[in-house]
Image 1 (cartoon, rainbow, N blue to C red):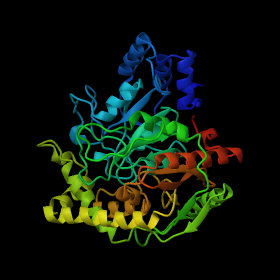
Image 2 (image 1 turned 30 degrees about the horizontal axis):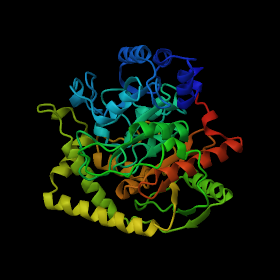
Image 3 (image 1 turned 30 degrees about the vertical axis):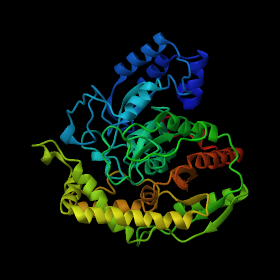
Length: 468
């Protein structure tokens, strides 16, 4: 079946003429969404795009994903397509313009099959929007796909899309990657443009990629990456396409590891620690030096992160007269944000940057950092959400994700890899991070780990969830 192929294999089949972009679109359009992956489907627009690609022919210099379908997270405005931001307050909103991520995907010749599901304004770490069914992991459809890129992850994991972009402000790519058994790559701050909205004045959030293989994730990063005029920050360009980094030997690396949660008083599930330990031994078997280090982000940074998160939520306002359609969690967080004064917000940003500087200095001697991705395997839908007590909801989310936000604070690139599975067949990710702007090294070692896993007879790309 076409969806058994990786995204790069599909792109190669298009290049050879073995399959057309329209045939790929039709194949995926015919697959049933049983995991809550999409809020809005755009199958006809995808067909029209695929026909235009075929009529125009493959352009000179087309990338390896030309003609391969994808989807757009419903946080990204898309011209002429309903864009809800995961909120009932925007259930009928149709933008006039697309943002830069959407335009980058279109320029790369990748037809979009729809808007992938996200929670309201991308805030929670689970994807249970009021405008669509919950996004669930295909490994157990009673359990969450994670968030906020839960729809994108569910779609790729269930074979509804070959590869998909997501976005990550506190773990929102890596969390669903762990829940769905995928590779989830959060790039460095400034690697992917936020044009034209630049909606995050703190610098926590960035688009990134969700894929079944490291090479697919790298190829999509090549589509998304690049500086745009007006960007407030940017990463230096890579020495070559990110895809090429997957074919390089990383050399002998110095690996720092820690599993102490940044959030205090968190119970870590044994499977998360087992995955982390197994990954440590795998890295050592590949010739790397693995050393235990203290967690570089102090617990007091959590309060500053929460202040910034609350203000960012307050900036995501409902249209006038539709405030009552917002979820209780959003209203609670926005209320906290509105209570923060301008100087308090500025001081919180400043302290976060100081915490980041200390962490970057402490980790500078190391090439990569290894932690668990999540404190637990994917939880049952509704287990984290608590509309009656939003503060409790928020505390549950923090306990589920006690490591991911550290790398949003520092701006370091980070990737979750599906290296472990519970006895019940649930995926458990482990996370590697690298110095800022060193995605090439991160992709190189991630590809090395993926190859070693395959050589052991446990290739994650060969795993198939029920209903595949």
